[in-house]
Image 1 (cartoon, one colour):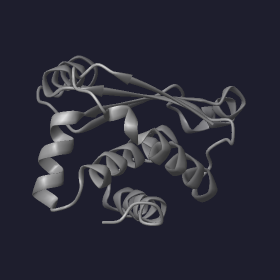
Image 2 (cartoon, rainbow, N blue to C red):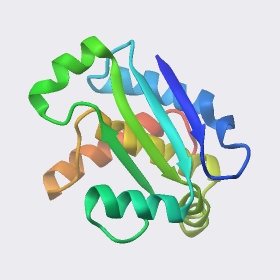
Image 3 (cartoon, helix red, strand yellow):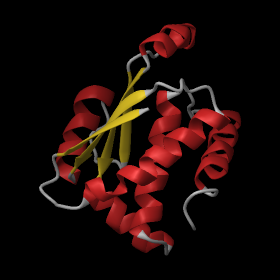
Length: 151
């Protein structure tokens, strides 16, 4: 398993969560169908950058906390993805990490790991467009993350 971290936020220290991300990826591979050789990128951006990404690629003209771009989008393509082991990219808004950690009353570590886990599940083909999908995805987030990072 390989994680590439790119920091475009202009802030230091976001790569300190690499070990947490690696542990989440390993745990995720135990809980959902993620190849043992999985590779992905995490790109830390600011609110302005993620706003542009959200607007340009999703047609939503506002910033968000995390956006994932899976290399394989169709459910039928996930077998191919396992062979390639390239999952895709997770963009994390560092300003949202700080504000949401404060709003939810937990650590920066918990929030950045939560957003990584959420993005990882999107890369693995999960979504939360319906209440049923949301229940499944959010339960998986808790199952993966709660074993590794304190609330």
